[in-house]
Length: 606
Image (cartoon, rainbow, N blue to C red; front, side, top):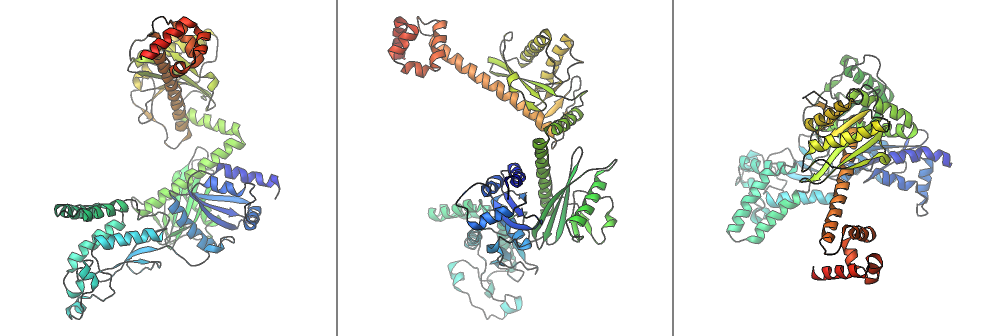
């Protein structure tokens, strides 16, 4: 494959996120030839395209056949491992020969029987039993089972404990009864109600709810401590601490949800993104996202209907599951004969819908990033239009300035002004301000001073005024900055808003009610980036000034050392420690013998 053929793949790799997930390699025919998992998708996939002589021949052959890369982002490495297993079984990729067998991950099952047992299994059967997992590690599964068996006395035998069988009196207790690991339901020594209470406690552990078993363990620890059995008490504490690290649920594989399809829709200004999940036998077997262009007067329900139709025809092979999970009902459910649409409110179905929506948002972000790389002018135009619309501005905010104050209990007050052009930082235009007319911690007066100084100078020099001014603060900061613009006659030329820190609330002059930007839109991200830059730039300057003032104050206390000498020393050595460790020759050459002697005397006595 030529280098020109590889460029699109390198672009795809550069856009991959650093989160864990599963990647798929496709050949020119669109067939998936390899499925892999990764702790960091970008780092793992990029390793295939590095010139490495240690790559085995099989990997080099695989890389030459790659024509497209797809990926799915998940929450953890465990979910990536489970999803990889499901996709390999479904797709049977050519280069995943080691995972083409029928091996499945282990589950923990609570059998549907009299005095139910808790066991390990690899066979997920729809027999009315409760299944928990799957577990990516057999060691983890065995640890949980061992914990339950040590803490909660439940039976492990395979006897038929129907009431009539127990009544015959043919059973005798086993070794587990004498060890205290079973309370003898086989001989009627334990009632079904008492056994059910212990079983419910074990099920709560498998669900991740540790409150019942925590109360049980605390009681056992208390009794062991009162009996001076400290080793036993510590053992209970260690078991509970170990269990806190386990998670019993995964959105990737479910024992309760068998065959469903999931659709989510994320809308943008000029496009919509529909994500499709296919769940078969409790496992995700397909994930895909498509981009749609909405028509005129197309509402969300109509867009979802069109998206489902498109996916069914182009991706799902013309079939839908009997149950389809959606964020809201499509406009024409009768088009999908025999399908029940579910809008979940809680539980695992809502978790699946959230996973689908997250996948759609990740796909949208990657598409926008790709657009920014390939066509930056179009991306900028689109972003500026979105910001103008969201912030209700008279023109595109191509030139934005943001102000922020910084002080420590009124000391070393400074301020910063950062400048963004076309949504990107213009760092050469950043400005620092030393507050000159304000005494103490008066942020409102400080804001008035820096806004007045900034725009008085711009007007005097005939420089360009910004398309938008952002004040880092709420209504108080905004009203003071707006008063300055009115004083300068700029209130109609320069739009201004305030950005409150806690909830990213936008305030407009004269309006006491806050305005909230879309939490998922780009305008809010740009505004927050500008605010964060102003804060970072200001606090850095404040710390630098405070540090310099501290150094100067230490040196100014030396008799016979004047301000000019202090500036000379700090300009050359930067820190007091380096001045203290300097040789006499260096100091004499810089400030003379008499001042060097006074410095040495001061440092010797301090």
